[in-house]
Amino acid sequence: MKKSLGVKTLVAPTPVFVVGTYDADGKPNIMTAAWGGICCSQPVCICVSLRKATYSYGNIVANQAFTVSLPSVTHVAAVDYAGLASGRDADKFAVAGLTAVRSELVNAPYVAEFPHVLECKLQHTLEIGLHTLFVGEVLDVKVDEECLDAKGNPDVEKTRPFAFIPGARLYYELGACVGKAFSLGKKLLKPE
Amino acid sequence: MKKSLGVKTLVAPTPVFVVGTYDADGKPNIMTAAWGGICCSQPVCICVSLRKATYSYGNIVANQAFTVSLPSVTHVAAVDYAGLASGRDADKFAVAGLTAVRSELVNAPYVAEFPHVLECKLQHTLEIGLHTLFVGEVLDVKVDEECLDAKGNPDVEKTRPFAFIPGARLYYELGACVGKAFSLGKKLLKPE
Image (tube, rainbow over the protein chains, first blue to last red):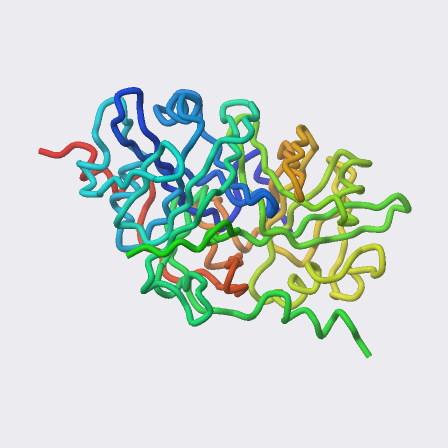
């Protein structure tokens, strides 16, 4: 029996994106965002939704650029901190012990210590309500070499990304692989 | 050392959304989508990006509504199938052995067997490229009662959602809880 929970931001899993920007003084900033994801395959685009009140919001508008760094579970405390503090008040890279790397493609920094990063040029801005959805075109994806699988794809058992679960407000790491996509369902696709 | 992988749809984890719609004949349809997520907290909105070529695309435009059903890992093969087949050619609910439930709030069906569903009214449409981003306002979230935690939130250890990993094209279930959000980082927020 399903119970109505009302109007709530409840889905699972959500990603943990660390959005990198520069402020007007060129100070690198990060913020953690769970409202986002890939939103187009061609051109490859990623969206992140931020509140106007965030420091990062103005930075993205000013620079028309941002990065998304995907942290490993080993950095969960630093990532949580980056979602609690504001770049107006703190140098979050310094407090979290992280290193800002200037993207060569867009005017935004990414996090050296995180194994998987995307460099993005702002393409669309959609005002929805409390949050504004920014669509960034992905100009490059960079991943630590030692975190790639035999085919050159990011191996989540090495990058070790984690998920945020709204409602319960918990972080979960990934568990076991449960099958191949675009494959498991084929037995249903052509039933005899 | 980071390696450039070029322009690719590589992030992790991505959610596994099963989007429910009715076609012009009132036949319920589902499709699996990994490009999506919550995109606003007030009003609560969720986005899903679909290719125009999909059957679901036209259904959403015609009905201005869709649902998102979040499957459990026990349904991974049915979910993969729903991403391979088209509602033009098949009754995916029937083939996958799933039950369509008519939403009382919007003109769209959700999946009875999946423990967590969202009923959505289309609010914005953003053409990006190959994919179109649909923003739906969430009118209700419904979750199987036995999958709620003591505070009434969905418990992912009971709903058992899973993630899609692009690139490697694998599904992963969630593993261990690695900490409380908006909590772990507090030790960095106010350093002595």
